[in-house]
Length: 163
Image (cartoon, rainbow, N blue to C red):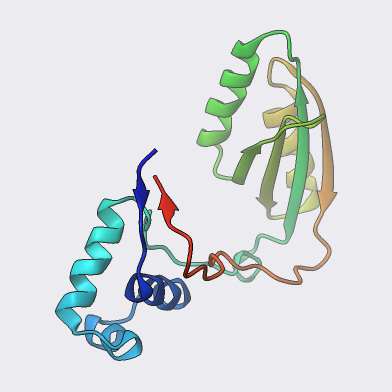
């Protein structure tokens, strides 16, 4: 595993870009006390190292009609690894599945799913999750209120990044 050491400027760039990745190089430079060209070179290096995976935007899904958000814990048959691989591949193709994590313990996968209505959500669970080969159980928890949603990594100036 390769280690990439971040210096103060790299950390500052990451912290600023996690808040607003649409800043111009000049604006970024002013916030981190570097030249615009140095910010651009450093940001490109962080991308090349895989530390910055991509630039994206967050959409308020409720404002565009997705009124249901749920977390679903899924258990699959453990005897056959093929079921797990099929499940993983299927989750990658379902746009309603916003996140999918493989877990240790009694739950095999945790999904974050969005839907336009409870009825649509119920149909999705029945048709797309419970009908999959090897799925033993799926337990839903419907989000009543989002208290905090942040994708930014807490600043850790003294830790190297492992790749």
